[in-house]
Length: 300
Image (tube, rainbow, N blue to C red; front, top):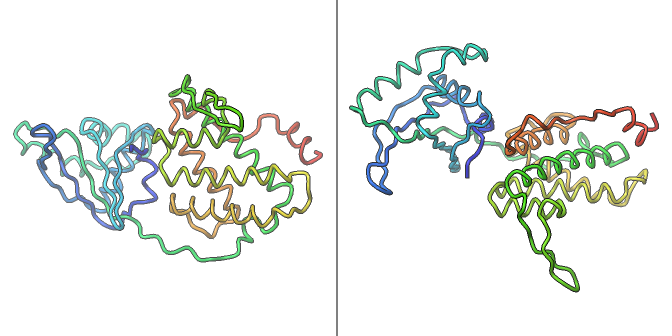
């Protein structure tokens, strides 16, 4: 499954060098390595930065316990990393060292241009997360926190629905109840059904599916007792929030010492989900009618 390249910066250990392979399909279903190049720590990071300038840039990603491998079309790869003018425009280091390393290797191929590029990086080894009380997140789930959970999930559902409208506008799923089975449009189904559908279509990978499931269950419990000052569901929401935060921090390699960990994690999740849409810039977190919203919830 393809993943946005700009999200990989939290997974790659740029203190270690990488290996670039120029790959070719010499025969049907047969791969050959045309050339293997050792890339320094600095240039490894510069390559990922240049590929990340376009948020639509995606690559096939393979993870192992200590390594991360990306595979990307050669033409797209060279177009982005050799564009020094664009590097300057975005404030990146316009060093030509990368060019001087790669171009001579391509010239040695005698016209055998690679079909795709494979880069093998050291992966960040994440320490085991400590089992701590989540007092920095939601010690007691009161009114403000529950409304934040609900409004966040509403924003998320809007993006998920838009992704379905773009790719599967007329797709239907079977809904079973006690009496009958009927088909409904996915875009008109519940959030749980939308998430499951996109997971079945491999738009969401397993880990992202699990994170969204935790978030959805948080929303369900928060909505159930929003009108209460203190709820018997507090402990359940704390457990779900703990699960959501730990899953998110692991996925994006986020530090676990921040205050407002839920909001921080949600922004990363929202950014990744938005990037799956054909129009990711259409989605902005926040409320345009903040006065009216605060009047509804906080009496302002």
